Image (cartoon, rainbow, N blue to C red; front, side, top):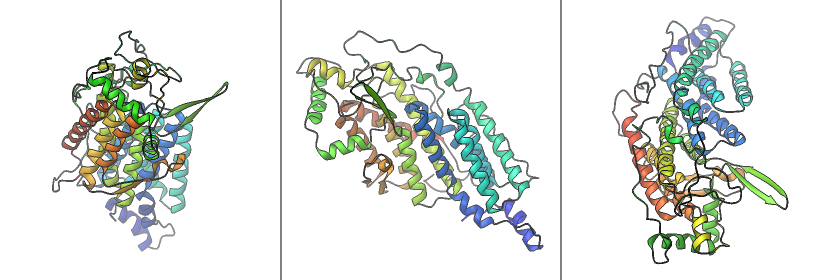
Length: 449
């Protein structure tokens, strides 16, 4: 396990000189090793309770992980800042080298500082931070070192927050809602809640690495046509038939990858809601599992998180740009209108246009980054949905999992095949772009991250 050299002497020398105050550096290192996994889980728990939409969730995961990476990087000479590589991110404040700093603490404090300003339940994040600091004191970190480390983490976190405030998010909160079109090929609100379209202006958010929201446009989908001999009708019939004849395996796959953050249920006159992970939260869970399984040190874990979160965030920006440009009809609307008025999808249709499939785009993007990191034959068990009573699923690769995501949207009755297949191609292009543009290492000795 790597050691933070700048702190090592400061912790060992007092012991050598027989001072009463002692510090357990191995204990600190062991504790710190898993903290980015822990804090991403904390963030997921809050995102679920705050009921953020998938695009917003991708933004929330990105900035804290960037802050954590940047606050930790000064302790690892082989790594470099990403300040010149993310759009609009200026040079990160550098630490005062005359002060003793334990950078893993700075990293978590930077994460917490940014994270609590992007969510609703700030008190919960502050509670997590208080518990974290209490554990550090129990382990025995020296107060001066702790204070210096916190101060640097806050400084980096403040810098990332100032950058985040300029990404257009606040401005999009005041923009008008999506206007429903009367054209037969366009998206219409769907049962049971008939909600307005979610985040119609997400393409105005500043991309993290892409040149623009329209940098990666999907290929054209099958042209809309209501005639029974058309290609579009045949795609609709595929969805219709699968749902009508769904088997247990396809049903399980649809449920496993649903990742709808807020599903409504109505019994009689009572409506209640179930909150779950978002699609980006599901891939953060997969990423955390791979980091844990491979016993990555904290810096390599931070590196992996920033790459994956960039793919997720830019994936949503790119996908939402296409969604509202095409404004495509959902299977629920088309099938009830032209095939069977009594048909219902397996999954609750999300409130935004159909093409391309958002989960397909971001899953392919994340899988591409993770494949670059861990290899094309990385077998893993996804236990993400145990929390909601679903069994684990086994995959031979990240790409296999991403492919199943696309199939799940068809099985669930919420997407046509073209939206999933072409969305996956779009996501793969975004993932490759992230891998080629974000350079985390000063020396490119290996082909991996």
